Image (cartoon, rainbow, N blue to C red):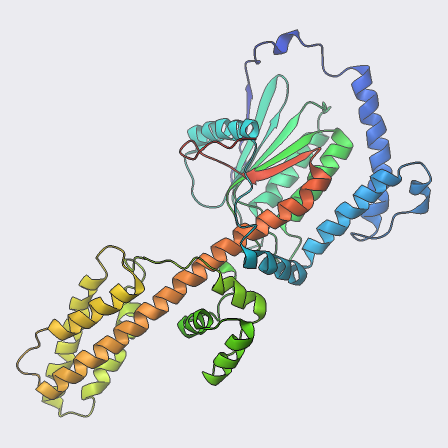
Length: 430
Ligand SMILES: [Zn+2]
């Protein structure tokens, strides 16, 4: 991968020039003081694992407040490192749908990100796939570096490269407190992977960059990735029968009884509530959802109708079944419909279809019936798939929301994380 570092002089903002040099003695002293103070606590903390109690010598120096905050910060971060615990926490939040909206960047920071993104796009082209870039904004110039892409062969995420690069840039120069770090990542940094997740790494680095260099960090993203994005498999068992059973049950207790009766594996209460209170799509589109072999496989049982017929009749029937299945694709190319509308459409199609006269009446009737059954199963399957996707999307959004809310109370001095807003969206009132 080509490493791109763009460095450009920016014209200073009006009035900026009149300000005194920023790297004054006082600034330096504050910075050094903070560096020493934080280094002591950082040191103690880094030597132990996250969330361990503070060292007594640090407490006696009147830093108990700072230490308590640092301690709580690391406790909070380490609770997120325990994926099992944090997933459960997010599921509980999701149930009430109170934390499923995005946390947005403030208007001024968002504006910066939009400008930087414009520059990067101009230089490197637009990109929809996961990538990251960063900017160190100094008084007199803006250093942009990236874009970086993940390398899934060696498990490297784009943020890993970005963190390393930022660290090197900060280490190699005399950093001013006025510098700002902007980190862009298409998907919000991950909250789970087989090594330390990017979100936790970045938050920890932001704290370190603040402690050591006094710089603030801003993290902007476009999509909420949650723990593992679309690969989230928490909802994999939610098929149509489950959805139907949940929707019909008044509460979890009744659901469990009904599920056991229907030979379904009962879901836990959190998952039950997440599905129960989901804003199920009333209208949806099946276009592009079912194609090729997937489409054909739904109608496989139509062929078993004439399986035992003589060779010649079987040949005619096979051809006819293929024609019906092919013709039925027209049902998909129409605009969105409700679940019932889709079922009705399939029923009407089967009822109205004119079969070849070579196919016997008995086989024709069986084909109509079997088609309806296959069609119904397909619609149910796709409907459940849409529900799972919606749940995953809400869950991922909720995970990022809950994480930011958890962490912000400790990091608000030096870190801002949020989703980017584009001009077509309504501006946020800060
Ligand atoms: Zn990651």
